Amino acid sequence: MAPGIPAAMERPHFIGIGGAGMSGIAKILTRRGAKVTGSDSKESATAEALRALGATVHIGHAAGHLADDATCVVVSSAIRDDNPELVRAGELSIPVVHRSDALASLMQGLRSIAVAGTHGKTTTTSMLAVALTELGLDPSYAIGGDLAGPGTNATHGEGAIFVAEADESDRSFQKYDPEVAIVLNVELDHHANYASMDEIYDSFETFAGKIVPDGTLVISADQSGAVELTRRVRDLSALKVVTYGESETADVRVHKITPRGLTSEVTVVLNGKYLTFTVSVPGRHYALNAVAALAAGVALGIPAHNLASALGKYTGVKRRLQLKGEAAGVQVIDSYAHHPTEMTADLEAMRGAATDARILVVFQPHLFSRTQELGTEMGQALALADASVVLDIYPAREDPIPGITSTLIIDAAKAAGADVTAVHDKATVPEVIAGMAKPGDLVLTMGAGDVTDLGPQILDHLSS
Image 1 (tube, rainbow, N blue to C red):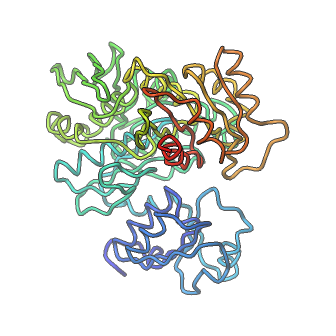
Image 2: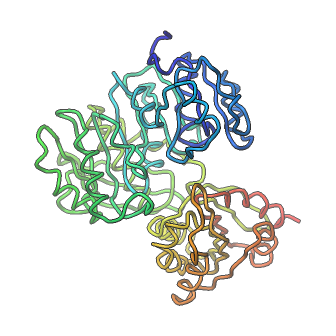
Image 3: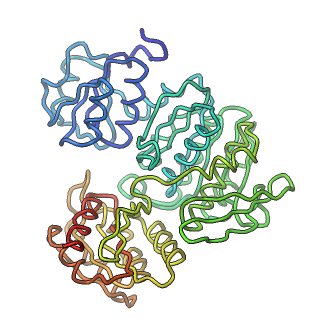
């Protein structure tokens, strides 16, 4: 057995290996010496990166892609029971392992930080990964997006710390036993898996209960759902709770956030002392993410002033207000925001960073279930833009829900006074936006689906 590889992970096969969560685990296993194979629906830069590391990646799904000597098949919650490779695994009696269990096995024996919350997980995990790397601690990490600097979503480090994004969407974050856990916020989302806020709280309580004895929960003192969760877990034995935020009661209190164009200067009060550092991305929500990262690192025993300085080296994550380029005086920025809270936060961040600019949004709703439950709030968020184009719903793993379309969002946006246009043919969006945009405008491609592909195309049209 190769060093650092659980026996079941020596020859893993990943179904959907190109996904953000799946590819990260595959990369770490490959770097540890495992013989990794997998399949994905289409070619991608991620597939090529995995091949460069030594993994075998097939395009398309077929029973023949699964080798008879595979030690396990790794799946995410998005893989359906009739997938031919999953069916073949059953015929061969090859163990099927959920992505979260695979990640949990890689974290064993290391000092782990698990970053959870309805929003901000990827950014906060990335901030920690960058800062710990900058400090020479060589962490391992698994993130739901590619860092703008290193350009990868995962790595196997030689250090003692493992930082992981902890996904609540399918309750898989309950598989981890972190030394430090971060909860950024608690809101109702992922409506196909959670029917109520009570179910959400129960899930997060279970996650907090998995923190190792004498471990630390770092949690927002500002967000109402996090405050309620704090109340519920205060009685957990052997758990230290550290709150952060702008509330006067916060253990790590934000004294001031000062916007400076596309960056922010943050001053916190920690152990009675003032500490100021720079966050190299715009927006109050990103500044608060950095404070959460600071509190988590301090909980591991890292000196606060060192960590604060290192956090300033973070330059962003792909798709999190990522500048794609500029043409004809128009900047095109990509946003992963797909929940109303995220949409509002990113639009407010852009308003704060570019007060004189017109903001145009190309929004692609993500999931029928989310649109059914939150479509009105999505439309209200779009009222913060000067004008918006709304695409059809990106289904991802879901089947359509009768009567649920983008019209729900558009009607709510218009009721809120927004200038919004429906565009059903995604291929026409670059031409539509090129006709709307003027020098000095900002264009945001927004959503968790393939709307990100439109950024370069919009720039091409603006240039022509």
